[in-house]
Length: 267
Image (tube, rainbow, N blue to C red; front, side, top):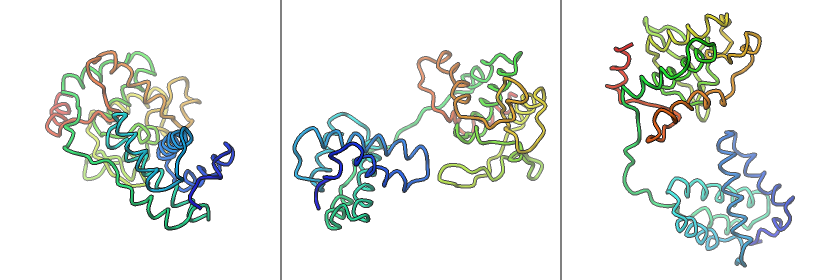
């Protein structure tokens, strides 16, 4: 079998795509793979193809490069299609030799190293002062921004952070045994000014249970005891777009180590 004949019907294509999505556990990976597979199938259906072969996937990679996509965007899409070939072969929907050829399709080359984008100390201080601390929501947002700036956590990690993660080690505050990307356990040092921002947020809400969020929702104490979602973290970063229109701020606002220490000293 060298064609995705089963994918001629939408329901069958969803079932074939589910083989790939069910093989990964990360919600972010599932979303990216879903996008890549839908793009591939749309391109595959637009014009006659010789079948689901290495040549077809290579032609799609060339089309992605013609769209001006970056190497990372191209490679993650190619990875999803490679995974599709492997799963199809394992389930008897594709000849093993064809699947092996597809897995050998090369991704886009990444030439050079990106410098990256970070905030200066002054920009970080302005961002940290943006929330209205006279409200519970402002205190919550400032605590989130302090964690992002001082600890470099991802937004999903901020949402999953609870008070039991914040512990002292050798007279220093740390975020201990935080489960991050791909299930990795991490321990992150926490500057004292970040701990003060969290205490200022949890104090008025009456949060003391270690299992409760370290940056609780601000509507009421009862609602604060529910799990925090990533949307409030995104909303807390909205002032950054208004304050620094010339910068496309990353979710993790990470400083250079020297600048991070300087900001800590200023606090």
